[in-house]
Amino acid sequence: MKKIASDKLQGTRKKPVRAEILVFRTRCVLFSLLLVTCSFLLPSCGYHLRGAYQLPPQMAITVIRADNMNSELVRSLKRSLETSGIHIVQNVTDTNGVVDEKSQATVLRVIREKQGKRVLSVDSKGRVREYELHYAIAIELSGAGNFFVPEQTLELSRDFLFDPEDVLGKSDEEADLLRDMQQDMVRLIMLRLQAVAQKKSSAVQSPQAQ
Image (cartoon, rainbow, N blue to C red; front, side, top):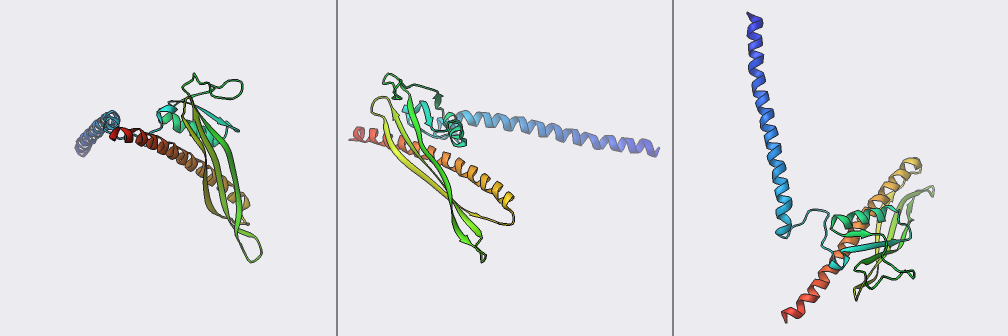
């Protein structure tokens, strides 16, 4: 009798658990549908998903030029441009490296990419205790017609504590910090390009307002 009663008790306990699972799954489905709906509605209201920037319309088709096309910066920049709706193509230049006037593509040049560090402080034994990491690039935009943004230099710096007793670990930490700076640089580039779009849009609207 005790065993039968125990089985009945366990059976009654399982039902609420199954019901809770069903409710949880239903909520997940509803939440997913809500996210999909928002992804369609937000852009029409003037909102844009995180990671997307409003770039100049002349950049709809863009070629990236850099000394090192396989660098982490260039790869991340390409991904960010594509996320913002830019179509990246490989080549629209003639034999002299000049943009074909018949092409509607814009060339984004990463002219220089430099990184370095300098000593900020040392300990009583003359060993380095702190570095400043420095990262800089220069970019330029040119396209068909009169679309041109002259060379601009972007710079970042970060302080980095160094431990002479843990050279290997600190080397890995420095490499991670440099990768973070490259991602920050990509965001800085995208913000600068977005500012170009806003400036040109304001310039177009001003004469119309007059």
